[in-house]
Structure formats: C-alpha cells, structure tokens
Image: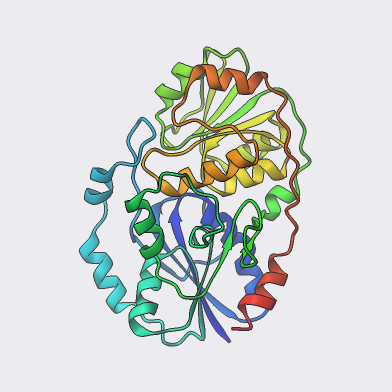
Length: 323
C-alpha cells in the first residue's frame, strides 16, 4: 500500500500531529509526505518529499487576520497551477490534514482521500460553535479542503468520528511542574503589544516570539525566539499558558494540567469556535489582550482535568487504513 500524507504548514499544530502520525503509518505502508503553507515555526523531524508554498493566512500586528496581507502574500494563480499538475495517481490513499492542494486535486480527479484534521471536526453539527455564525468562516471550513470522508480531532468526543487530541510524544514524555512563571505564545501579536500589557502584571512571563531573533528581557517579560527545546522546557515548568485559540497548544496545556487562557485570532472563525468549546469547559478567553482579564486569570486557581489517551495508532489501523 502506498500512502501520501499531506498536511498544512500554516501554524505548528499540523506538523506536531504529523510527527506522531507519519512514523506510525510507515509501519504499515510506504509513505510519502507533502506540506504546503509557509507560516510554521516548527520543523518536520521526518523527510518531507514534496513542498509547496500553498495558501497561508497572514496577520497584522494586533493579532487579527489580515485579508489584505493574505490576498497579496499568496500566489493564487500558482496554487491553481499546482492543483492541476500535482501527480497523485500512484497512491492508494491520500490522508489530508487540512492541505488544500491535494484536497482539491483529489476532488477534481476523483481520487481516494480521507481528511484527518482538527478542522474536519468543525463540519459535524455537534461541534460547539458561537451562536453568531460567520458566513465567510463557514465557507472556508467547508471548501478550503473538500472531503467526503473525514475524521476530526477536538477537545472532546462530540461525535463518534471526532477523536480526542493527538498529544505528541515530546509532550507526553515531560514531567510537568509549576514554578510560578507563565508561558506566552501569541504569534499574531507584536512583541511590543504583548510587553506593554504583561509588564503591568507582577509575575514572570516567558514569551516565545516569531518576530524576534534575539533573547531579551524588559522588566518581568522575557522574549525568546522560537526554539522547540527551550519552549518545551518552559512548557514543562510553567504555571500556565497564554496563547491563541488554536488547537494543539491548548490541548497540550490541558493535558499537562496547566492553567490556560486563550485569545482567538481576530477574524479567524475556527479559533472562535475553539474558544467557544473551551468556554464550555470552563476555560477563560478574551477577544483582546486585556489587562484586567489576564490579571484575574493569573490570580485564579483554575484546574481542568482531561483524559487524552495515546490511541492514534488504533484509530489509524481501525478507521483509516481499512478504507
């Protein structure tokens, strides 16, 4: 059996999940990998056979999705050409983690594909969403990667085809402690905006920034360039995590029993849906980086225990590779 595992390169969650799934797939089949997108700070620790620029979402300095930057920063004619020319006929199965090129190529060429992603969970009616639907956001979720067969991942099992998060081995192997400082990962915010707010809250902050190449400290806020080893060390020992409302980082924080506060990226509907789901679990969120709300969270005794089993191999064998 020959499989293509294609995944999205925007954000870090898709690569983190691929780091767990690809080695398992290689135990059962010959596997090639394909990535598209250009906004990830994590590097794949396995061979990537095909790489495309694809379509990435781009942001402004105040944490919002910028439609202007997204439109001007992507080459859509090249995307259409890649979809038409990408060769997939040699694969028995394409597994797709929210990757649009192979998604649309499979649809147009009627090739076998299953979507295996967090975004797939958004297409089930049981998944929590804000009362006010975002028409454009729903459109993106439905058509960014067209798929007929799908298995989703989410914070809870809202449907039989929605599984709990894939927690990467690098997180499962940590020995969490709480040493009083807080970790921050808000890649769509500028360092200046983060420092301006957090320096007013008298605890130690470790901010991992995609904007800075140098480590520096201003008052009680220390800025670190993206480095996975340093990030995991801070993740292991922090008191809590302040991050955007993506999927993998909040899921890992819950798994590690860390305090969690999320700020969904403005104009990104998927993150608003994630914040809605977390809100139902009792996890605080805000639309902006607001001093009073962050201070209240720091002063809180937040605790939320989750059970995220290490069952991704069982899911792959029983529900994916049998297709």
